[in-house]
Every structure is written in C-alpha cells, then in structure tokens.
Image 1 (cartoon, helix red, strand yellow):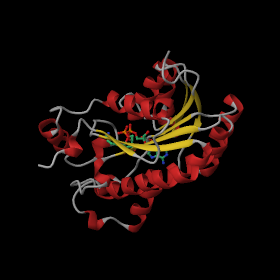
Image 2 (cartoon, rainbow, N blue to C red):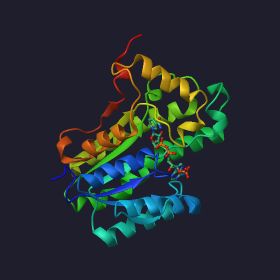
Image 3 (cartoon, helix red, strand yellow):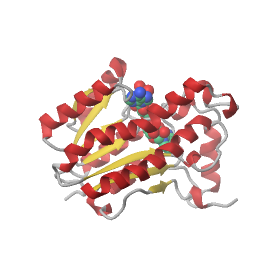
Image 4 (cartoon, rainbow, N blue to C red):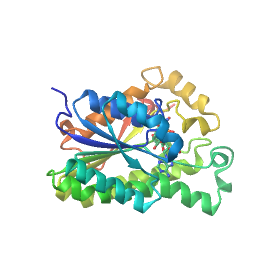
Length: 257
Ligand code: NAP
C-alpha cells in the first residue's frame, strides 16, 4: 500500500533523468499513483517519452507554461483521460544565463518579467486550470519547488531569488483561495542539486560545497530526497498542511554561521 495509491498526478518540469520533477514522478509512481507528464518542445519530448515509459506514465502534451492554449489543451486531455486530478507538481523555472551571474542590479525589465512569468505566475495559471479537476475529486494537492534564495540573498541567484519569493507568496495566496475546496498548496524549498537548470547558475559548485560543509547532516541533498518530500506533501499524509514552504535541504537553512 503506497501513500499515493489510487491518486492521479500531473508532473510539470521533466527535462531529463536529473530533473527534480523526474524524482517526484518516480516516487509518486512507486507509491501507487498514476502519472501524467508534459514536455516543453520537440527536443525534450524525445527525452521525456522514454522516461514516461519507465513508470507507465502518459505524456499528455506539450506544455510551455507561457502558452495558455497549451495549458488548456493539457487539462482538457486530463479531463478526458481521468475525469479529475488529485496532485499537481510544478517544477519549472527560468532565468537567462546572463542573469545568474554578477550583479542583480543589471537585470533588464524584459528578463525580469520573463523569469517571474515562467517561474512564479505559471503556478497560478496551472492551479487555476487544475481547480475544476480537483474539485470533482473532492480536493487535491499542489506542490511547487523553491530555494532558500527566496528569503536570503544568495550570490548569483539574483532574479531567480526574486522569482522564488514571488512563488512562495503565490503558494500562500493560492492556499487561501483553494482551501475551501479542500485543495492544498505548498512549496518544498530544496537544497542545491545538480540539474540542467542549476548548471546555469554561476558558482553553483560553491553552493553545493557550502551545504556539504555546514549543513547539520554534513552532506549535500540527494535529488531523490526532494522527490520523497514532494510526494509526502502531495499525499493525504499531509492533509492538514497548506500554504507552507517546507525545507528539504539537509537542514542548511537553520544554520546561523
Ligand atoms: P530542470 O531539470 O532543468 O527542470 C526545470 C524545468 O523547467 C525544465 O524541464 C525546463 O524545460 C522547464 N521550463 C523552463 N521554462 C519553461 C516553460 N516556459 N514552460 C515549461 N517548462 C519550462 O531543473 P530542476 O533543478 O529539476 O528544476 C526544477 C525546479 O526545482 C525549478 O523550479 C527549480 O528552480 C527548483 N529547484 C531546483 C534546485 C536545484 O538545485 N536544482 C533547488 C531548489 C529548487 P527546458 O529545459 O525546456 O527549459
């Protein structure tokens, strides 16, 4: 008996087998959930389809989160396939490489808006599309992935830190709107893990080294640990938890110096 048995989950943000979204998908599958995945563009479709096959997941369409008609089409597919939805995992973020180094001060208006649209507004758009499908199931659970750069100024994280602060605020406001429908919304603030996106952050290896040296557990966070935490918060085991940002970071966030 898994904690997600009988549940239906949409996971957005699988780029490859290092993606935190893929860790969430595998964990939910092993806990008994049926999984649906999306991909962004043809190149990623080629990577996502073989991964989907490993966990008997359906690929329910192309999804660029800035494209409203793709959002509509994905949720229409889910409605047809399942009738409803229990879980939604949002593991999507974007910043231009040039904005993940040097001075935050230099971020352009257009890059700032794009980062916030893709990394934070997308949660609102996806939660709105998920609401009617979760309502027919009597409730649901949404999780997004954040980072400590939302609440501390982490060198080079820059505009992505601002986007994560917005994402965590969106989690709280969505939790208030969706709570009366028994839909919970939370964020996992994960420790640094080597993925496609994180490789764009200048000095990323220093962030990992710092956590390995100074976290209470004296090691880096394993990507599967973010997947397990997300699965737990998505499941009914966390039925009384909403609007929270929960740290899955080998304890790094509690260390003073
Ligand atoms: P990842 O594998 O590169 O996943 C990021 C995903 O976002 C990719 O699938 C990417 O697709 C997708 N994406 C970007 N723009 C998009 C758009 N317009 N529409 C749809 N998808 C889009 O990296 P990850 O580290 O697992 O990141 C997943 C989440 O975890 C992100 O929110 C990230 O900020 C968060 N997080 C990561 C870490 C870490 O250290 N890795 C720590 C804390 C939180 P493309 O490849 O096509 O752009």
